[in-house]
Length: 392
Image (tube, one colour):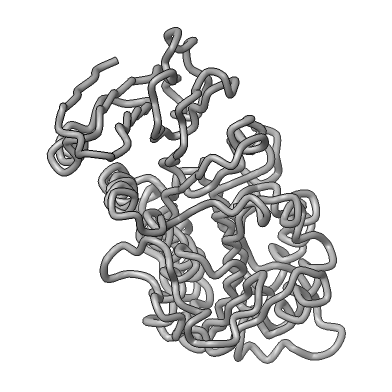
């Protein structure tokens, strides 16, 4: 563990000790920037080991006293196992947007220590993932890649119908930072956007994004959706899902309330003709009842492609139902077992929980940390504070 310190603490100022633990080498540019801007903070960095497959796996035992002096902890997933291990801790910053991996830790469940997240940093890359998988489906990219591998020059009759996104409706289930950036890009491509949130957003001020925003992205003022829906019960959710949704983005946090939020009843609504919705899940696999999702996708795979989507003229009563397709960056469980039918369904994209990765991840995550260090120093409210009562 590397440590730097300064004797420049001002009169009456709390002597802070920032401990940063990450499963990769010290990001020197970002760490040096903090040292220069906050000379009164003692700073330590600890690199954690990880498997070749994931940064999220368990690491080797930590050195004794790792958290003893820390007043601020910035980490991906490593928290003290016992409260006595971190007697001075008052702030935890997570280099992740979700918190489901820390809710069983006593820091979360048995203290009121402030926890902040890196919500807002993932919008650009996840939005691009959502659109590239959707466009790959609608433009039949896998089929064209197959032709290329086989050196076959085929034509439009062999490709099948291609329906662009103009006029289609995107339903964003969870209008947070990621949902707002997907909405921004989709709206630019001609889609109508509607939003669903847990709490009502009746005023312009209530629809604003108060968290961290990557410059030039998102929907800061909440002006993109043509309609807003809200609620915490099934009736409210079903009302939203019945709004002729063509593409559903699932971007809610995983909580006790959102576990298995979408099951057979919800998929039956989305699977109705002519829309036969496409589902994009960048939330958590447990938000969906996976067996019911597979059943709806199998029905959708059997549909005539020309009968799917707005303008297809297939909305007659009694028309076949099914989900046209899905893009899943998250599954239940993870890793997805090799025997899962999701791997082989022709209308499904599966990726191994990597949509949020990108070369800007570290820089943006540290920007949130630095923003809060600045606010802490000025005595201002922090951004991206976890509200334990709501679970995120």
